[in-house]
Image (cartoon, rainbow, N blue to C red; front, top):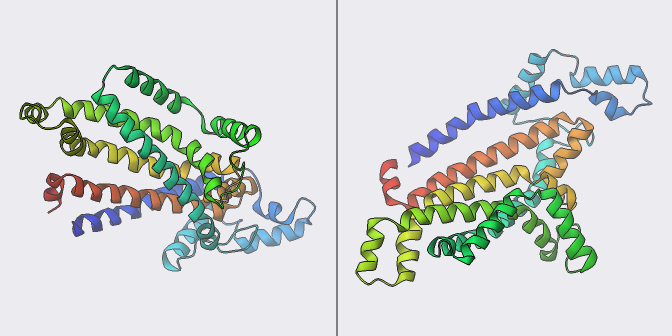
Length: 309
């Protein structure tokens, strides 16, 4: 198990290098002058030229990329923000708890609703509940987050006044963003749980348990569900990683001070260090989440644990 974890951590190195190169290339060739943006449109040209030299923006692409990688690896420094002049690590770490909380709440909503709904749909296949649940799941997958966020804000904040329309400081502020970001994931978890459960409950050992007179609830919860959880855990882990990086629209709509909103503002200002740092931070978090999911397999299925040994 330890060797497996160590190998997975080593694989993060080429992944991070690839992500860094792609994002750095995209930002390098994006139109706009960071020095001009920092100083303003009315700044003298001489000041802009001097600032570009200080930031090293006139150097060739490979030299700028090599300098960035060298500082990140050797000095653990991924730069300073062009606009606030604060370290990128500090800017991201102050915003990341809000993004992490939003993603965790979204996953909690999807798991709390999706898994029970998928189990009931599988055990009552083709019933009214199953048909309604699948229609709602299809709607949830198809509904854009930005539209749903605006509609929930309009109904529950403006018309009914039940929840605040922006902010993320109290549990009342968490409800609408969590539901908005968790709806699509909930639909995906529901469909995956249903299909996985349908495959398991048709196995011979389930029929044998029923023939022995086992209680149906025990068959579903202890035998079928545990063996159907592997693909569900995979989907939940992927959705958690997706929500960490895909919370940009939700954070923007509900004015949540998270990493996604910080990156949107940085892109508009062409603040390259913030964009690079945010993408790298999310990529590392996503890879660690996938590693945790793979380790969790061993606790769900003993056969996978024996493979690690």
